[in-house]
Image (cartoon, rainbow, N blue to C red):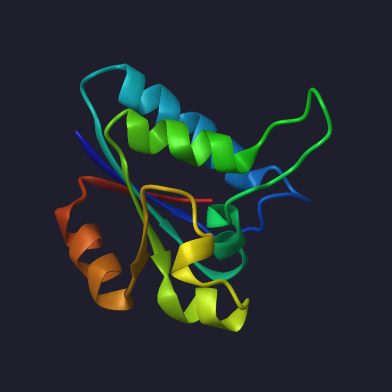
Length: 116
């Protein structure tokens, strides 16, 4: 099955992006799912490299890296990156600057769209 997951929330402050990433990783581990994630709005900050969190606290950047290493694709809204002053060189390896056109194509590709 093909899943598109759209994250809207900042990496920290709520657990919506965290929970979306947990689901994405678990789906990929089944070996029966294809996952694409699109980060829009405040979720664009999830893709920023070098996140430092207290010991024992989840790291959204590491979780995104795990999604990519397990075969998932991650696109980040380019306009949302620009609005937050994040440039491509500051993004986690495997993240791609993306567009609404790509989000549209991914939505048409997906069997299910899940929004966090």
